[in-house]
Image 1 (cartoon, rainbow, N blue to C red):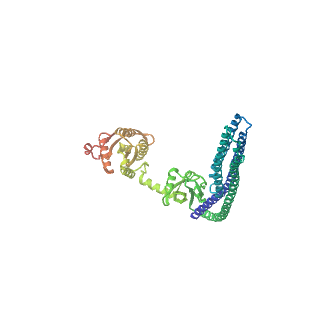
Image 2: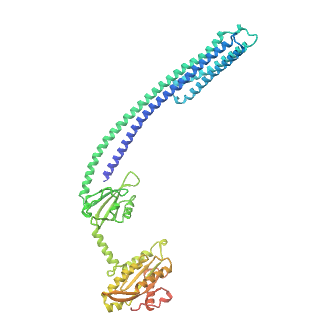
Length: 534
């Protein structure tokens, strides 16, 4: 079974590795697909963002062209002052619009820097692009200042047309627009470079993942071959152990940690008349199942031990089994399984039960005897202090029992004792235990009372039981009563003999008073009483 358990554990481990490998393959393939999707999305986003910025620069270039036209027209002498004022405002608006577009493009380019950091060449191009746009800001300011100055001079009365140089104005405009043309070219180069670097990165990652997937496939193939080999070994071992279990005379049951049967040997049918069902709880077959299964669970962190269990046969009677319970450790902190190896001990238990009855039960009345009384009292007296209860020992003697034997015979006396014993047991049930300690003398141990009043009530019930007519010897009537003496532990004695002596003296006080009376032992009163003939 140990080999079987080891093979099973190895099989589970290989299955776990295989599952992990398959999971990794799936995760890797999904990662590749997601990576490809992400890079394509980033490329598309880059294309959209970068070329949107290129469109902004183109529109800024058109705004500069419009501002140049407005400047040239405002310097003409064929327009009114109102028209020149409108053209001057148009010059300012176009320049402001161009500056706004370029500022937006710069902000957009700054925001797309972080997703692509680590790409050296594209970062260099991005730096050049920023520098070129900064130069545009400087050139644009010079252009606006020059245009404003020309417009300011034109509206003055001493305007000299010869001072205006269209070539100088065109040169400044060309310089400003040149920075925009250069920036547009850099944007295009930057976009192509980033896309190229993305493709190279994707190719590298795909290569690494391909090697990783190849290695995983090799591992899975190896594990599958190993699994097939171990399965074959396991089947051979299982066949061998099954052969052993089916041919041996002992009874074998294998359960999981919850008590569900995993295997039951066919040998059970020779004694039980059936084989316990696989998958059924073991508690279905064990008497007092919750207690018995608790015993099995108690060996979780202990060595194997012997337990005595009872299982119901197909005919309905209980079969005693001496069972060796062995925990089979699993991969956790608790045993994964329990193995029960049993042999029948029904005859031995029946013999032990007969010996127990002969030793501790009265053969005539079948109630506990004097030996049982002593054992019962020792158990109560030796209880731990926190569980110890007050104990009352009552001795009961039948009044006029000798008269019954003399008039109706000993068989009638025996019949009376049997009837009395049964009713006495029923009367004290739940309050204590009754014993026959000899002849017509009985002892009752009361230990479930909480007050003197409750004890008096119990004693009154005992007197009432005895004080009536009994039908014996096929209809003959016999009336009896009882003399009862009571001693309390530990007030009247710390040993069984001391308690019996005190109760005996109290009982004879009751008898000397005419019977049908219960008296509690009193040292000052009862020491004068000695046992008298009945």
